[in-house]
Image (cartoon, rainbow, N blue to C red; front, top):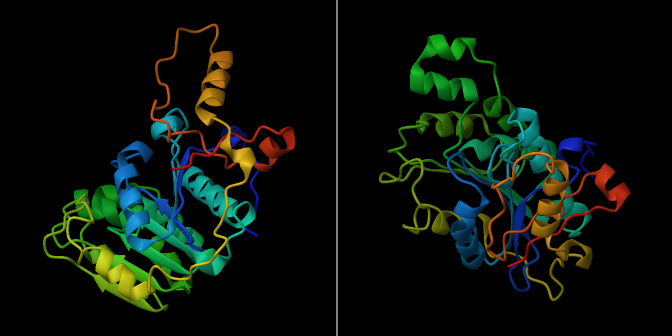
Length: 292
């Protein structure tokens, strides 16, 4: 089982979305891009669940959505991804080989990190960067990139990935040039496929054209994959309304301050996810998990 990190920042849980697919054995762990949060990516992950006939767990990052007040750093993104990953293993009882990691843009960092450490079933990288420093070099030049601290060195980790890996990068991507995915592809030693759609930009909806994602993913991974009579079941203790618990804790902490207006979405599917840390589990404070 992955390492457990006892981190107070996530003692109340991590916002996630759980979208189950009937009879699906596998789970896609989705790490979204920089210009979105869980609410914004919901239509995409729902479409992905329906298209690939797989369960999907999407995780939120520090600094985004309900975690907007948490400091953003490489270690924090790795921690939330690792927490969601071990939730799939320990709580949903899904085997390593039944997990596909999906990282888009900044989400490529935590997914390459996980894939380099654990024997997962597959890895999908969309608009991935070789490293943060190289991405900065592409945008602003070598001088500024040189003084930046290196973060998410995907190019150094991709050689340790052993699972089938699908690289997708639009030729019209002006934020992270496709040369980043080309470099990652060349350094990847696993079974691999690189797709560079001519009309695709950095934030293009991947389902506007079946050739962007659907067709290559279905063919490369043989989706929808293994089906079973008893698919992964979310334990009942994770169905508490996490939104209510979240607001109660925030109100308690800020009762002497002005009223906080940054509340979770009122949509019924957007709850605080039950990906508790070891410390939270010991206190019996597992927040609720959204289901759709």
